[in-house]
Length: 142
Ligand code: RB5
Image 1 (spheres, protein in one colour):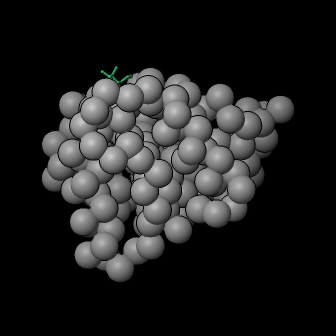
Image 2: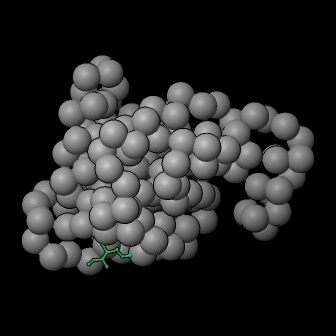
């Protein structure tokens, strides 16, 4: 199950992502926001982070205008590794190296075509499970 969250800056892109996930037959849960009204992105970062930490969802996608604020907020939660990505190389590397559990993007930064490719790359790339990467992730957690 994939958790989705956004603010007004990410609402339009989140709609595209939900249609894409549906097309792929992937299950997701939309934690809001649900329109383009101005809202506070830490609320949605919290909802998605908690959905992952509770085990309700395995991965998350967070989108605000830049992806910056919402990723900073999500990374305050212990066990969350939210990666702000702007290309597919980053989306792949953060799964392989960081075992990131949230993909963050900027709805005012990337176009839908690139964003959907990043979503697919992020969701389809497993963690490398290499000792050096496990060690570094454990160092972050400590
Ligand atoms: C909201 O206007 C904007 O600040 C937000 O979407 C995001 O870009 C913050 O980092």
